[in-house]
Image 1 (cartoon, helix red, strand yellow):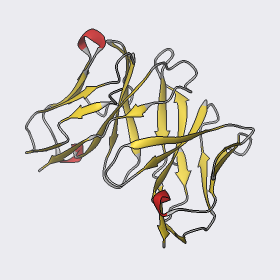
Image 2: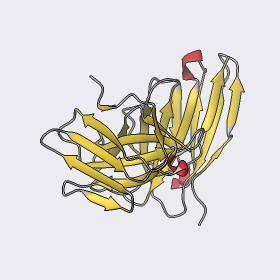
Image 3: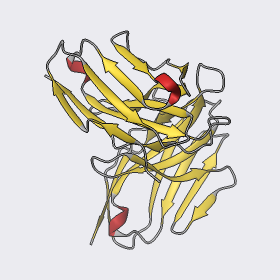
Image 4: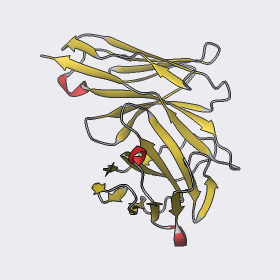
Length: 114
Length: 116
């Protein structure tokens, strides 16, 4: 079983649509949670951190359910510029003292169509 | 402020050759990480430096890979000898801290390595 699993995608949605991405993680000792965005042939960039209480940043809403080990990302009113691959990322404690390492899902590709 | 930089952006080498990748973290970031994405797979952790010390190298695939960070500034990742399965994109990231794991890691643009 993969450590972080995401919807396989791709998601093709019209402008203005609402789209939801889901993710599950297997390591119950995971410390922190993120959504990263990666444009084609570019580096991953942090989109938002995810908290148990849920958090919102403009059109983006992220949710974490620790009991179910489930993370979600909702994008409202999709824009053409939202087209990218969305990576579900979990930070787990590494083998060294005080060390943490990011564990990535394979990503879900989103294409927003005019 | 300059971001994380990596050199080269692209490298094509033959099987059995040696390649050295370089990463310059954001100034003042003590934590430096190497990750790799092999085609069709997810990005995977390789190792973590705090200043010049290797804090965690549990993700290094084998002893053909050697990472260094002399002086705690830039880091190099050497692959010797390279094998076909080493092809992929190697990302470097840096962060101010690592404490609870909530510090943002900033990624460099990556080095695309192709072994033929």
